[in-house]
Image (cartoon, rainbow, N blue to C red; front, side, top):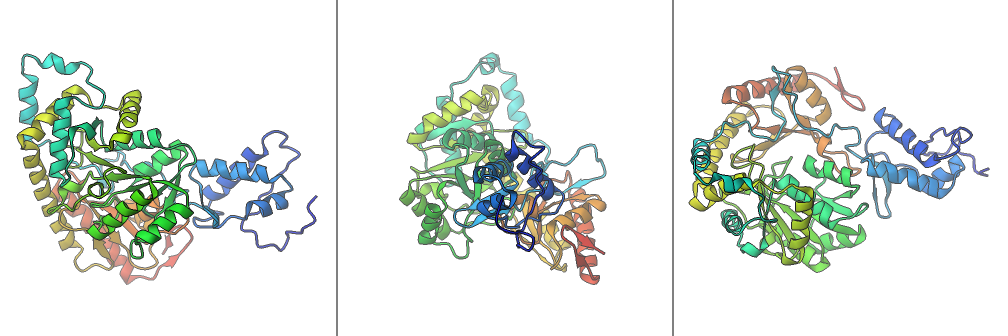
Length: 478
């Protein structure tokens, strides 16, 4: 029995564990108690949990029992830890991982999903019809070469040139979308328990994949204070195995990484010999693309250039620029997962890219986004808070008035039949995210629907500025 008395001890969590009823797996039971208290709101995001040794002493169990329980919860995405800093309740521990609106809710205006609801471009439709009518179409219904045929890799080189990056065919891999390519990278180059550095607010896809693969996500240092020495020290201190970033129209914040910062990342991964996964799926939506990080660290960077965000939502394809040292491993992983693009679709993409028609489609896409963003700026011009992102961004980052959490605003918006997603859904680690929501200007099916949704959000913002609100732990209470 412990000689310490914890009645007045400031432990942040004091679970009641009846060991007499738990003869077998006490670690599993303890993990379930921790999960229950997190999901019920008894332990709020950002709460620092007791040191494992102190908790073991309090419960009168072995240290390894507590260590295993924390490991289970970390693999479930419920807690996070920093080297030498302790264990915390994860900021996104109680958030729904699916960011797809329910199509059965017909009256709900979708300003949350990052999928564009655009009708298929006439150039795309015409090109596909012509290809489908060709007499030798049957050859495109066979299996393709793993990693992509020679012509597909040439198309990939050209696509990289569109993105402002020089590549060669021997580095190109064809994948069934940037998300699938990302899954292949995480499976091929990381092991359960490895630590992957990402932005403190990051793409939901990497959050979900990391939970599934039991990777530990660690928030990168703040961009305002980062330099090569700071980043290298962070990589070494936190035992970082790789880094994932979205430099162009970052999801969810719409931020564009400056050129100087890109060079810092390139220097740090080169110096430390770790992999950098660069997601360039939004690059072609920029009026003046900035050189990718891969330009400065080509032997350590895997560059993912998705097609669906810029050509058509249903065209789930991607070109991947991969260093020679990693290419075989990634191609084999994607082939084993069967997430390579079908020959029919990739041949269609090859034609679009090599003929230059793909760029024509991208230009139409950029014009549509410019009109949508101008409407958003007009409607929100005099509202409290601010909105980040420029005329080419497919998403905008709406910073809310003080004392308004992203989670609570998401709830209020849904009450007026508008779907947005709060910052909490994208948070990594122990830090409580800023009060903001992500708006997808590309998701509404029409300009009229976008206008209706934005007017409803403007009205909510005005109500917030005109009334007194008290902040509860999870949401606002009028």
